[in-house]
Image 1 (cartoon, helix red, strand yellow):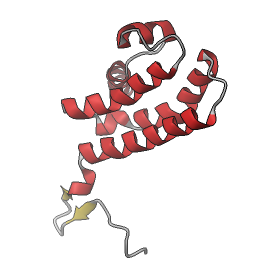
Image 2 (cartoon, helix red, strand yellow; image 1 turned 180 degrees about the vertical axis):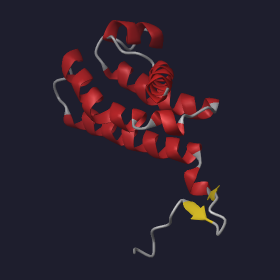
Image 3 (tube, rainbow, N blue to C red; image 1 turned 90 degrees about the vertical axis):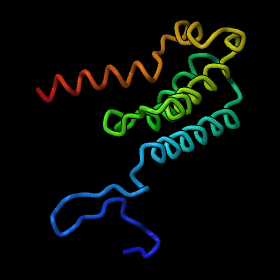
Length: 132
């Protein structure tokens, strides 16, 4: 085992699990946002032809998965976490030519995207439906 690797879950002799700081939702959000922003920077630097269609495909394939992977389970509830996650998508939508002057809601509507908050809510509903 790697000595630098720390487990985020401690099991006591009674079998109960105690959360450590490694399992906090805010830390998960920070990591997801950092990865998504890195991919967004990669797209910004690496793509010369920035059409709406190309950027949307790259966003859906490279950025959004970092923001939505298992989000129903780590479900951010703090406003700062939600704003951090949505901030990545806001930043992306401003990169698309002709979208910079529009409001976030208008950009989302024109691009055919949903807010990440809506996607989380829909995911929770589907998950509850599957579990029942």
